[in-house]
Length: 118
Image 1: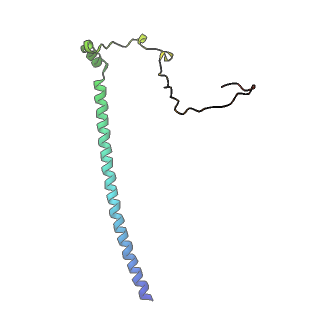
Image 2: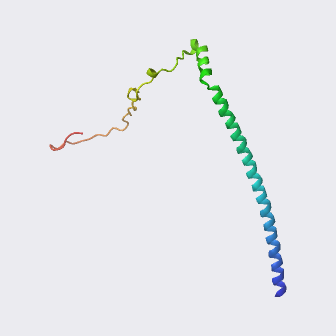
Image 3: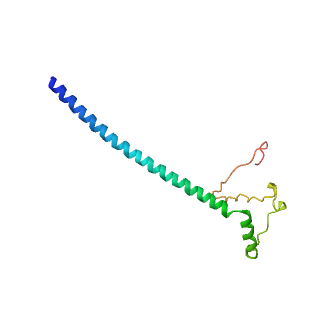
């Protein structure tokens, strides 16, 4: 009986060692994956910052004004004036479409004297 317990203890120690070995390598792979993702996120942030700086550079008011003046004959762009803006109540919103009646219903009978037609 004692030999069986020792063999089972040795097998369980070996099994736990194998499990710990596998978990160690899985953890290292996960850490490498997280580091790779963090590097990709950092690169994306730097690209985003560069694109924001480029967007700000391209949208400088003096540059846009010069482009509008240069292309005035094709585009007809005018500078914004305060009187160019309207009020919200001046906006014409589209009317909802009138849906067709597809299934007609016949009504037979007369209205009672106390009822009013709809």
